[in-house]
Image 1: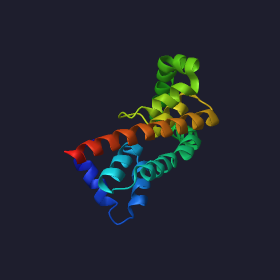
Image 2: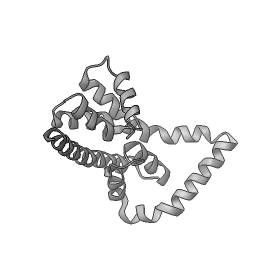
Image 3: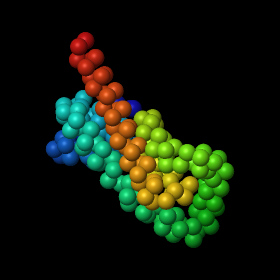
Image 4: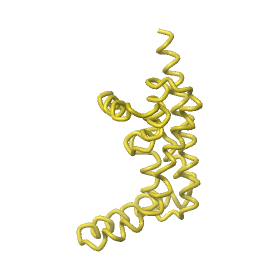
Length: 169
């Protein structure tokens, strides 16, 4: 993660209580809890369990609106020729490339995709994948929430381990 970007985000939320800043940082699509937990533990010195709970809550906030409104927004945009071609290409490509694995592994694949703490994975991308692949709301919500919980555990564990190592040097 770019340290300059972290500094900008931390300074942007500097007027807020640290617990609230942690929640807000975890709602951002670039950071999600993968950025919020290290900031909460390493910069704000929040207890790891509290950091985990705050970041998970914040990361979960946009999930329901995204799952509910990605369809209506894309339908609205499809009225325009450019967007209609884009969504047609996107849906065709996604179904051709990924639908077989999602049919075979279903919500488990979506949960694992969200759980992997790497760039371009997470709740925001998971919501987009669920929408494009036509995964039903309740299945997508369960998978994405499971992925958020697992990702939070992984990121918290790595952050606490790194913080412990760095503090002992």
